Image: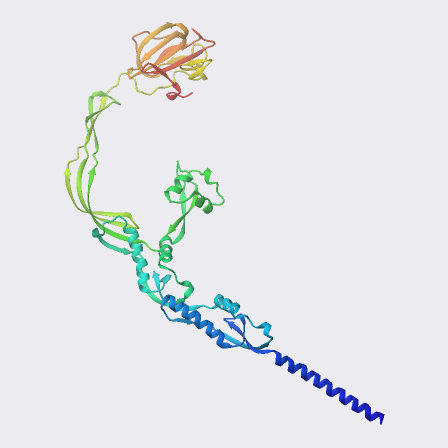
Length: 449
């Protein structure tokens, strides 16, 4: 009897366990929802209860685009729905789902590309917008040119406007398309530094900022450029180049030439204008070719001389120059070391330069001329003064011996005295002065020591 009770008890417990498992399973199914995991081109964007919600959001987006561009909108992406059972808390809120959808969805419309040399460069919503952009680029290059004088205007590149189906994200406004085509891409060029170049000059020449040059040459100190050094220059390269052929009528001057006639009435090295030159004038009709507003070539079609040009005639001397005549260029009067300069010294003006040399060193005339003084003069000691006949005089002071006398005609480089220490002097040296129209000037402007 007890054995039968034990068997019945086990069966009862087993039935209870089966009931409990069944109840839990059914409860899970009852409290979960049949939903859809949405995937667009391999990207999960959320879980929704109803497929219709997804299609409704897509249609809303398509209507929005159609209203803006007045064109039919298509979607070429693959949308997949995977059936899942999830709790209510796993369903993606509609606003969140819409945000995810807008990030992933790629809608397409029929638009028009500006195709340059076989490559689509920019896309606009319609053909009229594309043509307007191209016309504006042409007009930009016309600028001040009289439209009535333009014979031809065209792009150097092969340009066409073509209908294409594209992603809405590739569309550009007229303004952005215009700026993009005009500015183009950056073209890296090489520049060889020339004598006198500074980074500021180079930047100005290419309409760049100095920072632009530094960025293109990160390993170079642009403030210490060397002649013949090669640097990078980043120059904007437009996608389109505009050629304009202009028929122009204008007046221009005709430059005169300088003709030389030899004459024995002037010394060698001397020149004298016999006849002043007069520029001529002519009226020109020409065909001018401009590329991007810059003149590329000019073809003269017709010209009319309005006034004749008159050449300038210059007489050129052939007569042998006397040795005592000045050349207008000074040479060093003696060999030695510069010990005192022109200017303030010891509270007063030093009117020349001092050149130290051993006693007896030869002093020579710095240029040809006439000796107007040869003798002793107060602080100068033994002194020679030469008038060069061109407004200049030279002084040679503190000499130990004078080799010329007043009135002598001396040639450039001729010996005129010897170095000494006469007058107000503290050692053997030559005190050398240059006076222009009576006023002392710095001799180092004319000679080098």
